Length: 280
Image (cartoon, rainbow, N blue to C red; front, side):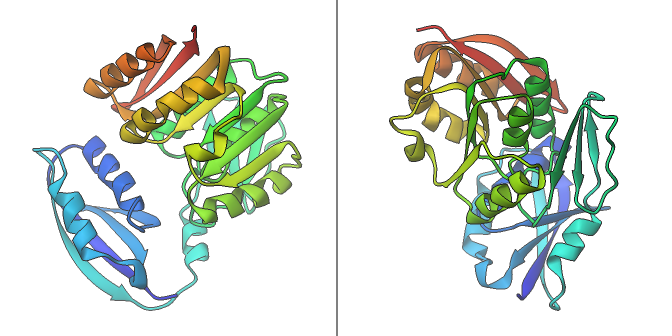
Protein backbone atom coordinates (compact mmCIF):
# COMPACT_ATOMS: atom_id res chain seq x y z
CA UNK A 1 0.00 0.00 0.00
CA UNK A 2 1.33 3.44 -0.91
CA UNK A 3 1.52 5.92 1.96
CA UNK A 4 2.00 9.66 2.29
CA UNK A 5 3.92 11.28 5.10
CA UNK A 6 2.74 14.66 6.38
CA UNK A 7 5.34 16.56 8.40
CA UNK A 8 3.76 18.96 10.90
CA UNK A 9 6.00 21.70 12.30
CA UNK A 10 4.60 23.28 15.44
CA UNK A 11 4.89 27.07 15.30
CA UNK A 12 2.94 27.84 18.47
CA UNK A 13 0.92 26.01 21.10
CA UNK A 14 1.23 23.43 23.86
CA UNK A 15 1.98 19.71 23.80
CA UNK A 16 -1.58 18.83 24.88
CA UNK A 17 -2.98 20.81 21.94
CA UNK A 18 -0.78 18.78 19.61
CA UNK A 19 -2.06 15.56 21.22
CA UNK A 20 -5.64 16.67 20.63
CA UNK A 21 -4.86 17.54 17.01
CA UNK A 22 -3.30 14.10 16.48
CA UNK A 23 -6.48 12.47 17.78
CA UNK A 24 -8.48 14.51 15.28
CA UNK A 25 -6.17 13.47 12.43
CA UNK A 26 -7.01 9.85 13.24
CA UNK A 27 -10.64 10.69 12.47
CA UNK A 28 -9.72 11.57 8.87
CA UNK A 29 -7.62 8.52 8.04
CA UNK A 30 -4.16 9.01 9.55
CA UNK A 31 -3.10 5.82 11.31
CA UNK A 32 0.54 6.16 12.41
CA UNK A 33 2.36 9.03 14.14
CA UNK A 34 6.00 9.73 14.90
CA UNK A 35 7.55 12.43 17.08
CA UNK A 36 10.19 14.59 15.41
CA UNK A 37 12.27 17.46 16.80
CA UNK A 38 10.08 20.21 15.33
CA UNK A 39 6.68 18.56 15.87
CA UNK A 40 5.47 15.25 14.50
CA UNK A 41 5.00 13.24 11.32
CA UNK A 42 1.69 11.58 10.43
CA UNK A 43 1.21 8.75 7.96
CA UNK A 44 -1.86 8.05 5.86
CA UNK A 45 -2.63 5.75 2.91
CA UNK A 46 -2.16 8.03 -0.10
CA UNK A 47 -5.62 7.11 -1.41
CA UNK A 48 -7.13 8.38 1.87
CA UNK A 49 -5.26 11.69 2.02
CA UNK A 50 -7.91 14.43 2.00
CA UNK A 51 -6.26 17.88 1.96
CA UNK A 52 -9.61 19.66 2.29
CA UNK A 53 -10.45 17.68 5.43
CA UNK A 54 -6.96 18.40 6.79
CA UNK A 55 -7.32 22.13 6.15
CA UNK A 56 -10.72 22.07 7.86
CA UNK A 57 -9.18 20.45 10.95
CA UNK A 58 -6.48 23.13 11.01
CA UNK A 59 -9.06 25.92 10.80
CA UNK A 60 -10.98 24.40 13.71
CA UNK A 61 -8.02 24.50 16.10
CA UNK A 62 -8.19 26.79 19.12
CA UNK A 63 -6.35 30.11 19.11
CA UNK A 64 -2.74 29.73 20.14
CA UNK A 65 -2.07 26.47 18.32
CA UNK A 66 -0.43 26.79 14.92
CA UNK A 67 1.34 24.28 12.67
CA UNK A 68 2.74 24.23 9.16
CA UNK A 69 2.69 21.04 7.15
CA UNK A 70 4.43 19.43 4.18
CA UNK A 71 3.21 16.36 2.28
CA UNK A 72 5.79 13.81 1.17
CA UNK A 73 5.06 10.67 -0.86
CA UNK A 74 7.14 7.74 0.36
CA UNK A 75 8.11 4.35 -0.97
CA UNK A 76 6.20 1.19 -0.06
CA UNK A 77 7.41 -0.56 3.09
CA UNK A 78 6.26 -2.96 5.77
CA UNK A 79 4.10 -0.64 7.85
CA UNK A 80 3.31 -3.17 10.57
CA UNK A 81 7.05 -3.75 11.00
CA UNK A 82 7.63 0.00 11.32
CA UNK A 83 4.76 0.28 13.84
CA UNK A 84 6.12 -2.64 15.87
CA UNK A 85 9.61 -1.14 15.98
CA UNK A 86 8.17 1.95 17.71
CA UNK A 87 5.99 0.01 20.17
CA UNK A 88 7.40 -0.34 23.68
CA UNK A 89 5.79 -2.24 26.57
CA UNK A 90 4.23 -0.20 29.38
CA UNK A 91 3.67 -0.80 33.08
CA UNK A 92 0.79 0.87 34.91
CA UNK A 93 0.87 1.04 38.69
CA UNK A 94 3.18 -1.99 39.00
CA UNK A 95 0.04 -4.08 38.42
CA UNK A 96 -0.68 -4.05 34.69
CA UNK A 97 1.91 -4.84 32.01
CA UNK A 98 0.94 -4.23 28.38
CA UNK A 99 3.25 -5.82 25.83
CA UNK A 100 3.27 -7.00 22.24
CA UNK A 101 3.77 -10.58 21.15
CA UNK A 102 7.44 -9.88 20.41
CA UNK A 103 8.22 -8.60 23.96
CA UNK A 104 9.31 -10.91 26.81
CA UNK A 105 6.65 -11.96 29.34
CA UNK A 106 6.71 -10.72 32.94
CA UNK A 107 4.82 -13.36 34.95
CA UNK A 108 5.53 -11.53 38.20
CA UNK A 109 3.08 -8.76 37.18
CA UNK A 110 -0.49 -9.42 38.33
CA UNK A 111 -2.17 -8.45 35.04
CA UNK A 112 -0.37 -8.98 31.74
CA UNK A 113 -2.05 -7.91 28.51
CA UNK A 114 -0.63 -9.16 25.21
CA UNK A 115 -1.59 -7.31 22.04
CA UNK A 116 -0.58 -7.41 18.40
CA UNK A 117 -0.52 -3.70 17.45
CA UNK A 118 -1.64 -3.73 13.75
CA UNK A 119 -1.58 0.09 13.54
CA UNK A 120 -4.83 0.60 15.47
CA UNK A 121 -5.36 2.91 18.43
CA UNK A 122 -5.33 1.71 22.00
CA UNK A 123 -1.80 0.55 22.72
CA UNK A 124 -1.94 1.94 26.25
CA UNK A 125 0.64 4.65 25.66
CA UNK A 126 -1.74 7.60 25.59
CA UNK A 127 -2.49 9.32 28.88
CA UNK A 128 -6.23 8.72 28.56
CA UNK A 129 -5.77 4.95 28.22
CA UNK A 130 -3.37 4.90 31.16
CA UNK A 131 -5.92 6.62 33.40
CA UNK A 132 -8.67 4.23 32.32
CA UNK A 133 -6.39 1.30 33.18
CA UNK A 134 -5.82 2.88 36.59
CA UNK A 135 -9.57 3.12 37.16
CA UNK A 136 -10.10 -0.54 36.22
CA UNK A 137 -7.30 -1.61 38.56
CA UNK A 138 -8.84 0.36 41.43
CA UNK A 139 -12.42 -0.86 41.05
CA UNK A 140 -14.46 -4.08 41.19
CA UNK A 141 -15.42 -5.92 37.99
CA UNK A 142 -16.27 -9.38 39.35
CA UNK A 143 -19.30 -10.87 37.52
CA UNK A 144 -20.20 -7.56 35.86
CA UNK A 145 -21.48 -6.98 32.33
CA UNK A 146 -19.21 -4.37 30.80
CA UNK A 147 -19.27 -2.14 27.71
CA UNK A 148 -15.98 -0.91 26.22
CA UNK A 149 -17.04 1.86 23.83
CA UNK A 150 -14.35 2.97 21.38
CA UNK A 151 -12.36 -0.14 22.23
CA UNK A 152 -9.33 0.26 19.94
CA UNK A 153 -7.15 -2.84 20.37
CA UNK A 154 -9.33 -4.01 23.27
CA UNK A 155 -6.92 -3.30 26.13
CA UNK A 156 -9.64 -2.11 28.52
CA UNK A 157 -11.95 -5.00 27.63
CA UNK A 158 -9.12 -7.47 28.20
CA UNK A 159 -8.23 -6.01 31.60
CA UNK A 160 -11.92 -6.05 32.65
CA UNK A 161 -12.06 -9.73 31.64
CA UNK A 162 -8.91 -10.45 33.61
CA UNK A 163 -10.61 -8.85 36.61
CA UNK A 164 -13.36 -11.46 36.24
CA UNK A 165 -16.05 -9.47 34.47
CA UNK A 166 -18.85 -11.78 33.33
CA UNK A 167 -19.12 -10.47 29.77
CA UNK A 168 -17.63 -7.55 27.84
CA UNK A 169 -19.00 -5.94 24.68
CA UNK A 170 -16.24 -4.11 22.77
CA UNK A 171 -17.49 -1.57 20.20
CA UNK A 172 -15.58 0.50 17.64
CA UNK A 173 -16.43 2.14 14.30
CA UNK A 174 -13.08 1.00 12.80
CA UNK A 175 -13.05 -2.51 11.36
CA UNK A 176 -9.26 -2.68 11.91
CA UNK A 177 -9.92 -2.28 15.64
CA UNK A 178 -12.59 -5.00 15.64
CA UNK A 179 -10.24 -7.41 13.90
CA UNK A 180 -7.56 -6.48 16.42
CA UNK A 181 -9.89 -7.20 19.37
CA UNK A 182 -10.74 -10.62 17.96
CA UNK A 183 -7.05 -11.46 17.59
CA UNK A 184 -6.03 -10.03 20.95
CA UNK A 185 -8.69 -11.85 22.96
CA UNK A 186 -7.29 -15.12 21.58
CA UNK A 187 -3.74 -14.05 22.49
CA UNK A 188 -4.97 -13.51 26.06
CA UNK A 189 -6.97 -16.77 26.22
CA UNK A 190 -10.30 -15.00 26.74
CA UNK A 191 -13.71 -16.13 25.55
CA UNK A 192 -16.05 -13.61 27.21
CA UNK A 193 -15.33 -10.60 24.96
CA UNK A 194 -17.81 -9.87 22.16
CA UNK A 195 -16.86 -7.30 19.51
CA UNK A 196 -19.18 -5.23 17.34
CA UNK A 197 -18.56 -2.76 14.54
CA UNK A 198 -20.49 0.48 14.95
CA UNK A 199 -21.29 3.13 17.54
CA UNK A 200 -23.94 3.76 20.21
CA UNK A 201 -26.66 2.21 18.05
CA UNK A 202 -25.09 -1.21 18.75
CA UNK A 203 -26.06 -1.00 22.44
CA UNK A 204 -29.70 0.05 22.07
CA UNK A 205 -31.81 -2.34 24.14
CA UNK A 206 -28.85 -3.73 26.08
CA UNK A 207 -27.94 -3.14 29.73
CA UNK A 208 -24.59 -3.05 31.50
CA UNK A 209 -23.21 -2.79 35.02
CA UNK A 210 -20.17 -0.80 33.90
CA UNK A 211 -19.42 1.37 30.87
CA UNK A 212 -15.90 2.32 29.77
CA UNK A 213 -15.76 5.13 27.19
CA UNK A 214 -12.36 6.45 26.15
CA UNK A 215 -13.38 8.62 23.19
CA UNK A 216 -13.54 12.44 23.09
CA UNK A 217 -15.69 15.19 24.54
CA UNK A 218 -18.10 15.70 21.63
CA UNK A 219 -18.81 12.01 21.10
CA UNK A 220 -19.24 11.48 24.85
CA UNK A 221 -21.84 14.26 24.95
CA UNK A 222 -23.62 12.69 21.97
CA UNK A 223 -23.57 9.22 23.59
CA UNK A 224 -24.55 10.21 27.15
CA UNK A 225 -28.32 9.73 26.69
CA UNK A 226 -27.80 6.15 25.46
CA UNK A 227 -25.32 5.45 28.25
CA UNK A 228 -27.98 6.56 30.72
CA UNK A 229 -30.50 4.16 29.16
CA UNK A 230 -28.06 1.26 28.97
CA UNK A 231 -26.44 1.54 32.40
CA UNK A 232 -28.21 -0.18 35.28
CA UNK A 233 -29.07 1.75 38.46
CA UNK A 234 -25.94 2.19 40.60
CA UNK A 235 -23.85 1.21 37.57
CA UNK A 236 -20.49 2.87 37.00
CA UNK A 237 -19.47 5.02 34.04
CA UNK A 238 -15.80 5.73 33.36
CA UNK A 239 -14.95 8.30 30.68
CA UNK A 240 -11.77 9.73 29.20
CA UNK A 241 -10.46 11.47 26.10
CA UNK A 242 -11.00 15.10 27.10
CA UNK A 243 -9.08 17.95 28.72
CA UNK A 244 -9.06 19.51 32.15
CA UNK A 245 -10.87 22.82 32.59
CA UNK A 246 -13.98 23.53 30.57
CA UNK A 247 -14.34 19.99 29.16
CA UNK A 248 -14.84 18.32 32.54
CA UNK A 249 -17.31 21.02 33.58
CA UNK A 250 -19.40 20.52 30.44
CA UNK A 251 -19.33 16.73 30.73
CA UNK A 252 -20.20 16.75 34.43
CA UNK A 253 -23.17 19.05 33.86
CA UNK A 254 -24.39 16.82 31.03
CA UNK A 255 -23.96 13.69 33.15
CA UNK A 256 -25.83 15.17 36.13
CA UNK A 257 -28.76 16.09 33.89
CA UNK A 258 -29.04 12.44 32.83
CA UNK A 259 -28.98 10.92 36.32
CA UNK A 260 -25.25 10.46 36.92
CA UNK A 261 -23.42 11.51 40.07
CA UNK A 262 -19.73 12.47 39.72
CA UNK A 263 -17.45 10.42 41.99
CA UNK A 264 -13.86 11.29 41.07
CA UNK A 265 -11.53 12.38 38.30
CA UNK A 266 -7.91 11.91 37.30
CA UNK A 267 -5.55 14.27 35.48
CA UNK A 268 -2.41 13.37 33.53
CA UNK A 269 -0.61 15.94 31.37
CA UNK A 270 -3.78 18.07 30.93
CA UNK A 271 -5.83 15.02 29.91
CA UNK A 272 -8.68 14.01 32.19
CA UNK A 273 -10.70 10.91 33.13
CA UNK A 274 -13.74 10.71 35.38
CA UNK A 275 -15.92 8.23 37.25
CA UNK A 276 -19.71 8.59 37.57
CA UNK A 277 -22.41 6.44 39.17
CA UNK A 278 -25.96 6.28 37.85
CA UNK A 279 -28.24 7.33 40.72
CA UNK A 280 -31.58 7.72 38.95
